[in-house]
Amino acid sequence: MTGSPLSRGRTDHAVVVAGTSLVADPAGALYWPKHGLLAIADLHLEKGSSFAARGQLLPPYDTAVTLARLTQLVMRYAPRVVVALGDNFHDGGGPARMLNEDRAALSALQRGREWIWITGNHDPEPADGIGGAFHERFTLGALAFRHLPGNGVGEICGHLHPSARIAHRGRSVRRRCFAADETRLVMPAFGAFTGGLNIRDAAFADLFGTLKFTAHMLGDDRLYAFTARRCLPD
Image (spheres, rainbow, N blue to C red):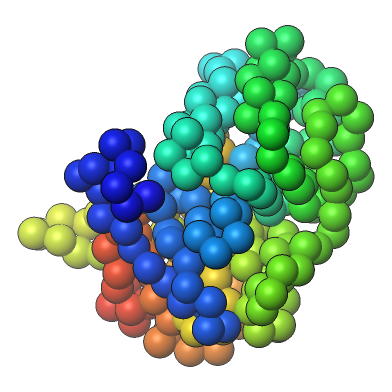
């Protein structure tokens, strides 16, 4: 964070949810300085091997790429707690398909800190051999970390893979984003092979009930905030 050599040239992007000040990182993670908590959503580890098992070949490196990106974040923030908000693996067999080197990288990330896996719709059951603790929901202070969005104040959730599209200098730009208002925040998908759902989709209208919520679009070294009303539908 501020003063760290790894954060020079980066701009901290503050968001406030249920009166709680958080930092949204351009990599698609959320950091809570008060508790040293780092949250990521929708890793979808082993998506490549899941597709390969069904005869659809994807490059088999998604788990390694995703864990390498997560390692950079852990180095940057040195969190005491990491919360992964569900769909951590693309399917229930994902943990068993992990390569030994990827399993070792995950174990190194967990060393010396609390690691919480939130169960998701792709991986609803706890898995053996990947460390950490499993919860359907994790509550700390005014915030509740879960996978599926609901109607509670203070929700930090995943599942929807929000992305936003805007017109910029005569062309359309689409990026993953955080979708947030003062009561809840939906995190972007973190996994290397994950796509995005446009925030103008009905799923977001149903959740927020208005287009006054904000899309915090991911840039290379900062985030860009736009009201949902300004963002373009697909």
